[in-house]
Length: 118
Length: 114
Image 1 (cartoon, rainbow over the protein chains, first blue to last red):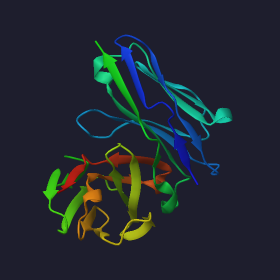
Image 2: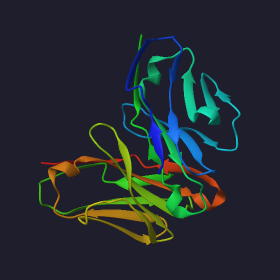
Image 3: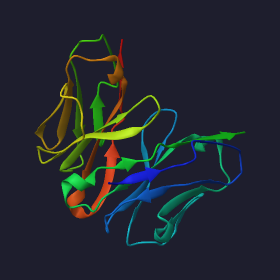
Image 4: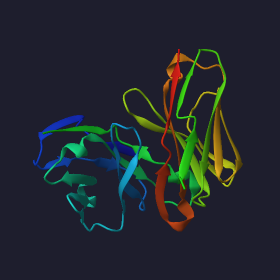
């Protein structure tokens, strides 16, 4: 069974602070994918990043960076110099080895509500 | 040129009614999904279809019946609506056989059962 744990439920920061959102996952699959999605107050789900289990390279995209560590089963997300527009619910998700449709579903964590105050 | 579209965006109805939500994708994907997001924002898979075949059915009550007339469409019909069915329902699609299971989500349908 797959499981995603986002232990932080709500985080509040002041603009320009750095913030890290934690994600820990469990899976028995040797091939799997990890994702982060953003859900702003408007409600849509916005894809941020996908990482496969064979690629532990960290990634940076502007103010966003991701740290994938298989040894600790973690896929953490850092926002540098946070802005008010970053206020949203952030979901970490996991899917199994694909090419078999039944394994392609996303298992989501419970989400972290990030509030960035001006 | 919306990738994944859902109709309606909002749905308000009385307990006991039957309602449908429609989903269409123009991405050429072969796998489509329904997810339910409850009042606590928790997202959970309900169903998945691959090329019109049901491949995932996650302990959803029989009152929920998905239908996929073709691989670009996945509709969700709900019979005898209950208060607990109030939620946001998201449709998504992907192309898992490419090995890249990025799922594209529709805008969601907010269902309110009174």
